[in-house]
Image 1 (cartoon, rainbow, N blue to C red):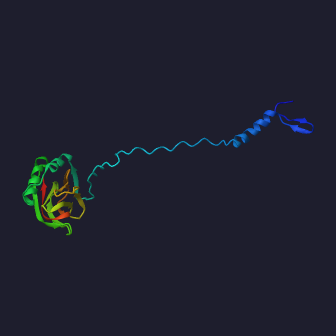
Image 2: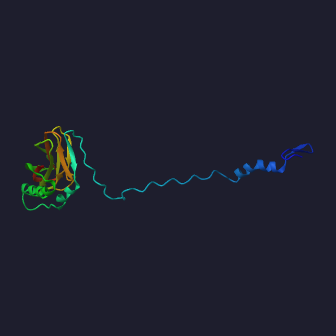
Amino acid sequence: MQPGRPTRDRGRLAWPRQVVLAGALPASLAACGATKPPAPPPTPPPAPLIAHGAALPPPVPTTASTRATLKLDSTWLHCHETFVVGAGDAAAEVSRFAGLCAAATKMRRVAPFAGEQAASAKPQTFRWKAQAGHCYRAYGVGGAGIKNLDLLVVDGGGAALGQDGSDDATPVVLDAGSICFKQDDDAAVVVSVGDGSGAFAVEVWGD
């Protein structure tokens, strides 16, 4: 008998035992509940770059204006961080504030503004003549009744050039730099109050 060929046994075909067992193996595995290997566990998400609950870094200032660019210098932050409002009125304090930064910025006063503002009132706009090739910075100080004074600088076409990122009464735009004009422009500083009301003073300084 050749291996793997059936033989006759009393009128029946008899397959060799090893062939029968081989044919029955898949069925026996299925009967035992054999399945495909389990899929690998999902890959865990990457660890966050910033710890949960940590403050996000401030965004880098940008502008869509075609009339001016932004010049960034983080060392200019120091004079704002160390300034404390004194007992003088807002006009005197904003001059002192800007003067503290003059050594670093090499700027001088270009345009002073003053008024009164409340959180419920519409913003006030003050314009100055910006010159091509020069850079500017706006300083503000709110009086005793103002807890949050806000400044926004725009070009003559209304495009935003910079806005203060603080929630106190001593805003600076730009806090870490200046706004440099590529052409002569009727620029403006827009003053509003986020909390409180009272007198304020703003000064624009330039190089």
